[in-house]
Length: 185
Image 1 (cartoon, one colour):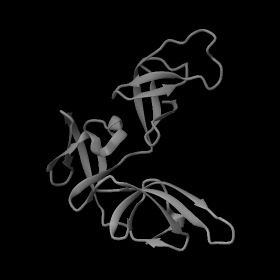
Image 2 (image 1 turned 90 degrees about the vertical axis):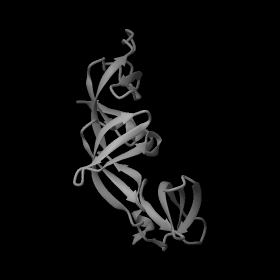
Image 3 (image 1 turned 45 degrees about the vertical axis):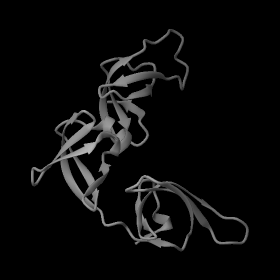
């Protein structure tokens, strides 16, 4: 069972018998009443978004998720093909099912895939990955003020903002949760 103090982004919980994933949450207290938590939830199966307020004393059951290690093989016409590492069964998943995480997938690497009722619903990935910059704008002389960034395209097609000293061919560490530059690799 989860309590409100266990909340974090992406945590799957059951609310009224339905599986939801926490998108955002914030604690608040008004006047004399008990503290409460305002949440934004996304239904795991349908994608419906709901805003709901919970008391700090509420508890939630985790949904019955199955996790399997699967190897990412390739992408073909908007379908991602994964292979189960134990049974060698192949699974095709629509590209839009995992959102922006598809930009961090590498062929022949293993990832944890979450299933609910036999349907893939989530992808577990490391908090950061190392990627190669394929193209970026040249630095303009005098543009070295702090917090200046420029656009860069990575080897998977993802476009992010990087510091001016990063050039094409550099390997960088990128945060998979926010798609932001962390450091040079």
